[in-house]
Image (cartoon, rainbow, N blue to C red; front, side):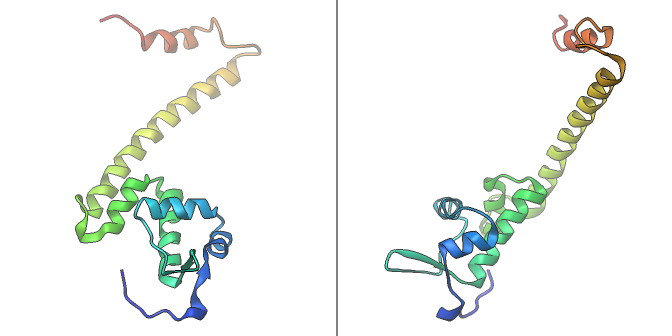
Length: 140
């Protein structure tokens, strides 16, 4: 993480950071428990965050929203050279998992389009529907 001096005027309390990022303060505390972020300082028991910590929180939210990554994966990426896996390995694994999800979602969409276009009532009894039900439970 880049180092930079932060003056007190740049520090924001946890509730202000939460509002700025559109998340709950409890989420920030949870990220802290997970070791993903630390407050810049504590004053009178209150957490204060500087620009670097706010940026780190924004990065966590970005990876969650746009890459659909778990906090474990994000933690490994943020760990840098201390991670058990390299960031490229983590990203490649996520690409594979998303590819599998996309295939399942495309198959689900195709099935639902078929059901919606071919039936005026529930699909129960439709040969296409019956094939899908039983193909998962066929005996070898």
